[in-house]
Length: 261
Ligand SMILES: [Zn+2]
Image (cartoon, rainbow, N blue to C red; front, side, top):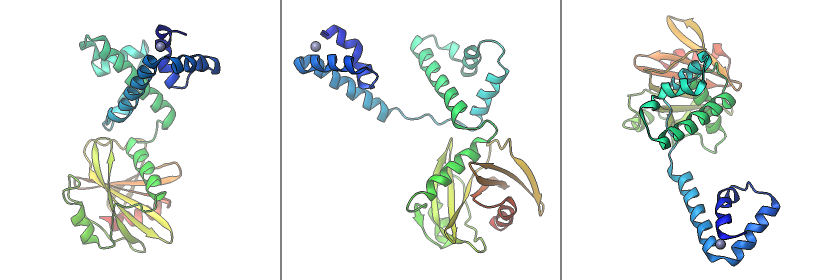
C-alpha cells in the first residue's frame, strides 16, 4: 500500500466497507505516514460536516403522489419521466443532474420501502408524530390544562389562529408545534387514564386526503383512515384542517371531533 493507492480506499475505509485484510493494510500504512493520516482526518471532517450541514429538503404535500403516479404510468424509461418532472433537462451541469438522480432514487427507495402507497402523507406524518410524542417523557412543548393559555401560546408560533377545545372526559395536557412537510402544525394533547390523543390543526389548503373514507355526521364531513394501528379523523373548520390521531374507534373520534369545532 502506498500513498496514491490509499487515496482510493479512504472513503470506503471511513464508511466501514472494507474487509479485514484491506483495513489492516490501510492501518499499517497510516501508522507510518502522517500525510495520509491528515488526509484521512480531512476526509472524515468533510463527511461529518456534510451529514450535519446538508438540510433535508421539505417535500411538499402531494409531490410523493405525483412522483408515484408518474412512475406507475411510465411505460418507457423511468428516469426520463422523473427528470421531466423536475425539469432537470434545462440544467446542463452534470453535477446537478447527478445530484438529481441521487435525490430521486433516494426518494424512490424511501417511498417504496417506508410507507404504504394508499396512506395519505398527512396521515402517515401525524401518526408518526403521535407515536413519537407518546414515547417521550412529556408529549408536549408547553404544558398547561388551561385552554386560553394554550391558545395564546400558539399565537405567532403557527400561521393561522387556532382554538383550544375542551373534550369531554379528556384532560388537556398542553400543546406543541410540529413541522409536517411544508407547514407548521399546532398539536394539542389530551389524556384519559394513561391514553393520549393528539388533536392537530393547520392551514388546510393543498393537503391531499386521498385514500381515506368519507363519513358524514351532524352535517359535517369527516375523512378517516388508519396507519400502524392508529385511527385518524380529518375535517375542515373554515381554513383550518383539524385532525385527531388516537387509539380509538372511528365512532368515538367523530364524537370527539364534534366537540372539537
Ligand atoms: Zn501515505
